[in-house]
Length: 140
Image (cartoon, rainbow, N blue to C red; front, side):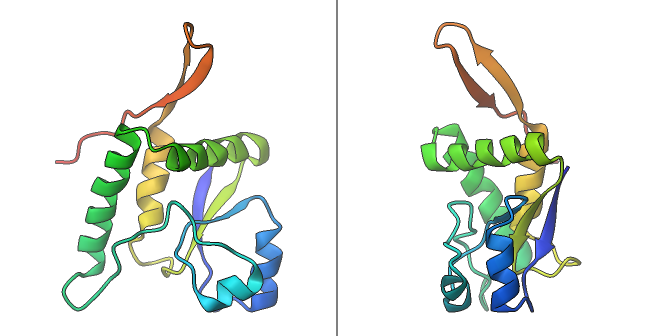
């Protein structure tokens, strides 16, 4: 199972502990507190910040389109991180995507969870490599 967890309000010591727990995958942007705890910005971070002109829903919709585009063009760093999360899920059963959004707020983690749940591993016989093929259901 892949879920999400909010790191807002966590102490630096707690963040440092989460950094060493492979079940927690930080998917947000960098900030001074995280940097101090040794946590780097994620390649899966939402580049569309919430602003006066861009609300949370718009930010997440832009992210959904952006991440789908990155996957469709074969962005290696994003695909590698998604594959790593799927591997962690296979290993630990429960994996948590950590971000700053409150649990009751929509978050780009929800987009990633939908993508990760909808992907299937397909073995390419010719290349003898594993590829992810996206089977994201079309939104209405």
